[in-house]
Image 1: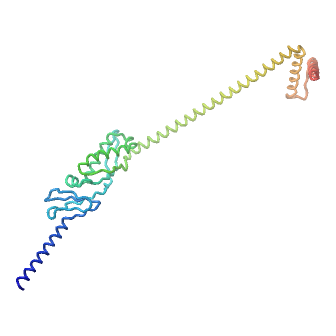
Image 2 (image 1 turned 180 degrees about the vertical axis):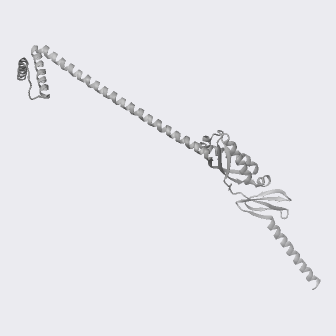
Length: 297
């Protein structure tokens, strides 16, 4: 092989090497980041930058992607912690937390185990918050308790580059002795309410009966008043007739009363035979005569 051919062969090799270096540099310098991730770039062991989704460029052979961090929302496993309320009741609280990493450079360099740190923080906050509340308040104000836990947790994990999206209290469990005591109290309250309801029913029944008696008395008094008014009116009419017609009208009224008396006697028991004195018969005869004369007039 002559020297010229050797020189050309060496040049081709150099070009190939340079082309390979360029291709490797491009490969090392271009980073395509998925939408659900962020890349933490270091240079000589120090934080250089954080790459977002899309095409990114770094300095080849100097910069390197040290951490690939998912920014998707995560859920911590359900955690149970014991707490004591202000009225000295032991409860076991099941909690769950949802979060996502928004600043990977903080979560990478400030905390080693994010899940464990958040779980420990939640346990401390739950014990502190429940310790200031009575058991009834824990059961009835669960939404307010959840919001308080989320707010306290958000302030703490902000230094770790984490956003708490949701915190949940899944269940509040009591020990068996407390459950039995609460059940006994609940049954006693139900019995008390039943007695109160029964007593109120009896009271209402007595009130209605009294109202009915009062109404009956009022109606009877009203009837007596109407009867008295009718009798007074009849007496007035008789008085006017006596004044106008004299003794004849009075005798007519007496005769009418005598006829009514005979009718009542006849309607009584043993009405088939009626014994009367002769004077009474003469009086009734006079009465019938007056009535007959009155009708003829």
